[in-house]
Length: 415
Image (tube, rainbow, N blue to C red):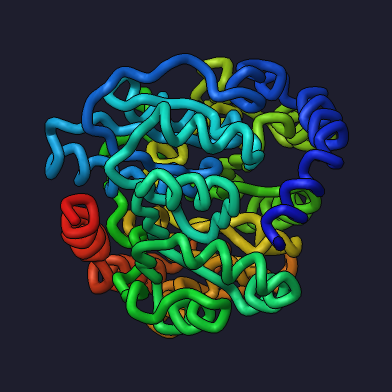
């Protein structure tokens, strides 16, 4: 009954969903492409054993990279299909894997689309990253006898309270889940509280600790100067970041900020803000590397944070001075960078708690505090090393989730 009501609501809202995609396309034209994949099943898929990984957007794709690599090694005779819902996620799949995996957008969660899709894909197993609950997709998998595994399952207290309002629908959806690999005991408890079968829930740890860390630098650039990176910034954060950088420049005139906005549709606006602030700027999208008088290097390309982190000495993680909930700090920590963050980190609460308790991260409530921490860390090499090493130790101590999940995948897929 609840799934029927959910489906009817989706059909009623379909014109608004289309308008929302068109609205997003005003800032990111990629939303206009490949619409057929969003509203129909699409081309027939080749037969053969297949594992299906669904990762909604950029963050989930990055988290899935070590898992997909491990699946390719453990199941060499299987095709790997990765579905996403956003252009940034799609671009990251292609950048990371090229033609080594199959890739599609996941259609809207409508019953007339999900049944044919599952029959066409015919996977041994569907693995869904993190908290994505798709009632019609899960129901179609159950009808076709396809196991569903929630991987790196996370459920914040805020999301838990929101899902409680529609608990019958959520509980019915979770009944189709064969295996639920939760990040932590808290996440596992919340999933059980929403109706997940306790027998299918295991605590496997956070896959994001198992990230692959590339070494080296970008285009041969050697930055023999104080450098900090503001990674994945959102609307409302660029101004305080640039103000903080102004304070840093007053103390360290040759300091460089690597500024990386989260979304490509904001690149031009952030470049304008840098110019308005009177800061000399180089842009990655134009192939520019910072000259001696460059004060901001704008990371206005997609998927290059892993290459930019090694050039910095301190990392500020965006999405945290505004109420977005923060972004994954583990890549910065794995590179041995001290991590700074605003107060809004509910998306990665456990990770930031681990880092702050170990001395590898610090919360800064505003641009003044951010500037103060930056000046301390960029001028005190011993303190910077101490905090960076503490951050790296947290990452190393929590690795191993991928191996545990892949072992379980083998059991479920062969069952």
